[in-house]
Structures are given as structure tokens and as C-alpha cells.
Image 1 (cartoon, rainbow, N blue to C red):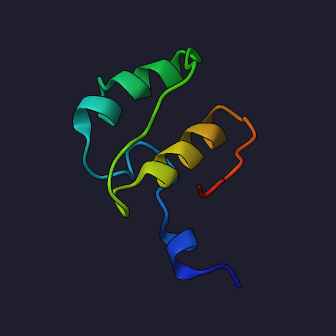
Image 2: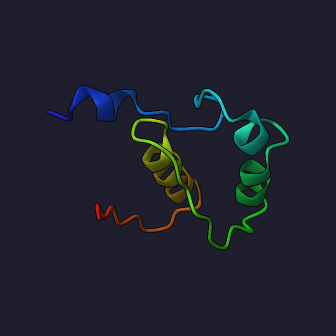
Length: 71
């Protein structure tokens, strides 16, 4: 069975809470994904703020491979 955290992870921008300037209706990252024009970005911040969730969501929406590395 998949862990609860994985099952509850947001799947769309509308499910994601916070960072409206990035993923809201007119957010920068959201617009890049909607236009299929996302090159590379650096997600930086403390643990638990949604960096991995956002990266996974973007990869799924763009149908791109996602490789999770912990360094």
C-alpha cells in the first residue's frame, strides 16, 4: 500500500496551497507549464515546504521522467 503522504500529495496546481505568485492562476511556473515552456528551475527551501511535490507535479503534468535524488 502506498504511504499516506504519497496518496495525499497534490496532483494539480489547484490542489497545491500557497505560493500563488508561482503556481496561482497567473503564476510564473504555472504559465510555463501550461505553455510547455519550462526549461530548468531551482527549488530551494527548508524541508516540508513542497519542493519535491511541486517538482513531481510538474513532471507528471508535462509527462516527463522524474528522478528523486537526495544529496
